[in-house]
Structure formats: structure tokens, C-alpha cells
Amino acid sequence: MTRDDCAALDTADPLAEHRSAFALADGVIYLDGNSLGALPRATPARVREVIEREWGEGLIRSWNAARWIEAPRRVGGLIARLIGALPHEVICADSTSINVFKALAAALKLQAARPRVRARERRVVLSERTNFPTDLYIAQGLLALLGDRYELKLVDFDEVAEAIDNTVAVVLVTHVNYQTGAMHDMAAVTRRARDAGALMIWDLAHSAGAVPVSLNDCGADFAVGCGYKYLNGGPGAPAFAFVAERHLNAIAGDPFAQPLSGWLGHRAPFAFDPAYAPASGIDRFAVGTPSIVALAALEVGVQTVLAAGIDALRAKSVALTDLFVELVESRCAGFGLTLASPRTSADRGSQVCFAHEHAWPVMQALIANPARAVIGDFRAPDILRFGFAPLYVRYVDVWDAVEQLRDVLATRAWDRPEFKQPRTVT
Ligand SMILES: *Cc1c(COP(=O)(O)O)cnc(C)c1O
View 1 (cartoon, rainbow, N blue to C red):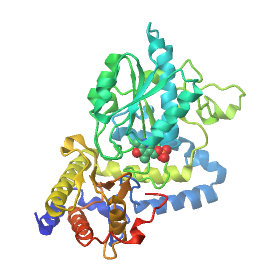
View 2 (tube, protein in one colour; view 1 turned 90 degrees about the horizontal axis):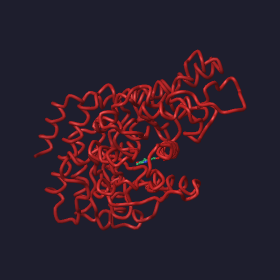
View 3 (cartoon, rainbow, N blue to C red; view 1 turned 30 degrees about the vertical axis):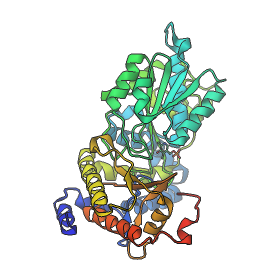
View 4 (cartoon, protein in one colour; view 1 turned 120 degrees about the vertical axis):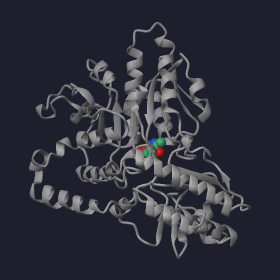
């Protein structure tokens, strides 16, 4: 494999043209689209239109005239196509953390209401020790609020399926692990949960827009996900929540099944009734007024993914990550890197991680490279994380990133005090 071979792969790449839909500087190899997706070129104009025309001129009339009020459902409906859901099962709202709270609360309440002899003994919320911490923190807070009727049980990534038994009320796991990129078999884990009578919540933060997901084919109960990673919605973009239609029907009679009962989840927000009565369907997973500017940016970001097609994106993502593993192992051998992601592409998402003793300064040196910045990120304690957003990462970028990595390691360019300074955001 040579750089020319990589250039030839780019020439033959059916997704190559999609890169021009993004504003990416020449001097940057961006391998962090799994943490913050790149800026679509269409976003600034759309956001300007929302601000200047819809807000500036339309003022409050735009809630109806520009259909602002429909934006959470409209964008949710687009995301539904990427995750194997029906349009009326997905809403864009709030952050992923808050959607974890809503989904877990609703799942626990559904479980408690089931006419099962042993329902009282289902006291376990099962998750992973290496799950993204916000999911665990939210679960801890909710369980404390519920008076410790439930216990959060944490197991290793590989132990999740086995640990699902009839003591488990809800399983809360992330499809693609943020730290290693390891991907669960969604169909198998969900089946196991259903067979044991547990409800399944999937966090799709590192899946939506990168990996085909079939929530309904797998029989998933709830899901949440993130708008600013592979969906390119911009920093702090709204997140999404999925609730299977059967559960939306099942909770219809319980006004507080989703306990963040804000006015926009009300059946008739503009009736201003003092008593809460939930909207039917997924609308009750809305809470307060949506951020319209942010939703407009997210809508453009989701369109960039839909335009490419999720199956083509996955095929390229597998090729990019396989190439990266192969090149790092062949060209950076002897520099203390250990693959921390699954070797088999079927078992991982769109990122590749290597452990290294000096991972933090190595990543700082890559980012600070004056010729071409290679932007990945660091995850404690020793992980170099590289994300491959197939919409805009090229095969030559993979080649060049590996050469820069080898250069940083071979010359010990990382071994300088400025690269060892801690930063707030890693
Ligand atoms: C990125 C990420 C989140 C983000 O949550 P926010 O509420 O948007 O900060 C949640 N869960 C997982 C698994 C993530 O990777």
C-alpha cells in the first residue's frame, strides 16, 4: 500500500463528492467527527435565513408560518430513517443526557405497571462499567430520586448479554462504546432482554449517521442519540429520543409515564390548562420550547447523511478503519501502540483507538503539527482516539495521518512541556 494507492481509492470512491459539502480547511486532517461533526457548507446560509428572515422579519409569526413548532418532529422523522424507526417514534429534543432520564424513567414505570408476579423483584438497571459516564450519572440520579427501589448494576462490555436475567428491569447500554469503538450485537442483546422480560434502551450517540441501525427490526424499546457527532448538527445540537409505538400506546393512560411533564409535551399547550395532560404519541417526550436555530442546523446536518445513504457510509467507514489499523500496525510498529478497538470491523463502529503510554502529549503534538494538524482526541487514561466520518474523510487522509503519527512517535515530538499541559476539554 502506498499513498498513490490511497489516492486511487479516493478516485474510485462513490462518496468522494460528498466531502465538498463540508467546510474543511486544507491544513487539517479531521479525525474527530465522532465527537463534533464538521460544518456542512449549507449550514451558515440556513442558519442566517432562520435568524434574519424567520426570526428578524417573521418574529413570533414564524412559529406557525415557518413551521418552527413542527421542527422537533420533522427532524426526528429524518433521523428515524437512519435508525430503522417510524417517523412518529422519534423526536428531537433536549440533550442526550436528558433523553436518557426520560427514557429510563418511562421504561421503569412501564415495567412496574406490568402485570407480572415477579415485577417487584425486578430491581436491577443493568449497564456497563465502560458506558459513557453521563448515562451512568443520570441513572444514578434517577434511581436516587426513586428512593433507591432500584439498583444500578454495572458489568463489563462482553458480559452484558449474559447478565440479563429476570431480576433486570431495564438494560441501558450504548451501541458503540465511546472509548474503544466496540459495537454490541443489537439484535442479540435486545432479544436476550425481551426473553428475560427486561426493557432495552440503546444509546446511539456513536451509531446514528455512521452505522446502519434497525431499532424496530431488533425489537428495541427505547433509544436516545446525539445530534452533534456523526449527524453534523453543530456544538450542543439537539439530541433525539425513540420510543417504540407499542410503548407509546401502552403509556397513553399514564400522564406522568414521562415525568418531565413540560408544557410542550401537553396535549394542548396553548389551552394553558393548570392540569397536565400528555400529548399522544412521541410528542409527550418534548419538554420545553425547542431551540429553533439549533434544530435548523441539525436538519442540514442530517440531510448530509441522508444524501449519502447509510449503507454506503458504513461500507466506506469499514474500509477506512481497516486501512488505518493496517497502516498503523505496519508503519508505526515498535513505538508502543496497542490496538484498543476490535480488530474485526463487524465488531466496531467508525472509530479506531490505540493505547499508548504517552497518549495525551502524542495527541497534542499531532494536533499542533504545523504542516498539517491531525485532529483526533484523547480519552483517559491512555487512549488515542481517531474517528472516521466517511462523509468527508479520504483514504489519503488516513495515509497522511499515519505518517504524521509515525513522525511524532519517531522524533519524540510529543516530549515537550507544552504538550503535557492539562486542558479542560480533551
Ligand atoms: C456524546 C455522548 C453523550 C452526550 O450527552 P450530552 O447530553 O449531549 O452531553 C451521551 N451518551 C453517549 C454514549 C455519548 O457518546
